Length: 322
Image (cartoon, rainbow, N blue to C red):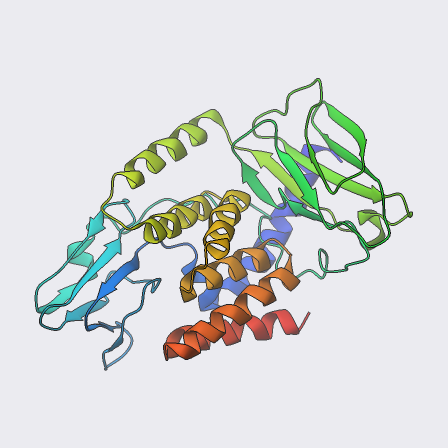
């Protein structure tokens, strides 16, 4: 398929999802970075659209008109859109728009990158692509991984796009791209995986893609990461912020890697699992998304985080309709 045809198809998908996202808070919130990273003591939020304060939790997103109220001895850290950290730590009320001066950070969500409405990537009989799936990437030599498929002992992997038409055979559900022609920046690449038992991603019209970011975008991401690493945050907060940063640049695979490491490390933060669920849903891996959402819901119920419970339950309803 030619690049122009791909782009037209992606634009069609994008606008279909765009109108849905306007009425879906869980999707709309992903495009903001202002979020609470750490809470100490009694900290509450007054949403611009509400009349009463409610408890604040790590991972809560904030709008410019939202206010924070701190009790005596409390403190809070907010990661702002400009990657600075706002840290009110005295008793009183504080408006986000005055604490986080830059609230219009540019994000790079590419046309067609949101495929949450598909059933693809959820059939355990198919070697569907897991990573890099519907994502931008930073490397020209990515590692591909896919669903292993019960009973399959070998796989044929095909990557095509631009001047690349690479095929290789492997015995494990993972391979590093090693074609003679390097992947080019700004080109969409298709991936087709066929197991030696005859099943293929073509069987369910699963058509995942990935694209290597441009040099300028890669430089900006590296600059942003360096800035973020200097901020006074604990390890989990810094990694959650890094995942949001990757997500804002459509680097879904990198965001997933960061969050899954937190999961393996035993994280019990609702926002970690909720963001993971959201990204998996976003790229069409709804079964993985559901799994992470259910864990997020359990943690949200334990901490009595009603706002998170409502958002997660709405996301689960979306997945269950597919």
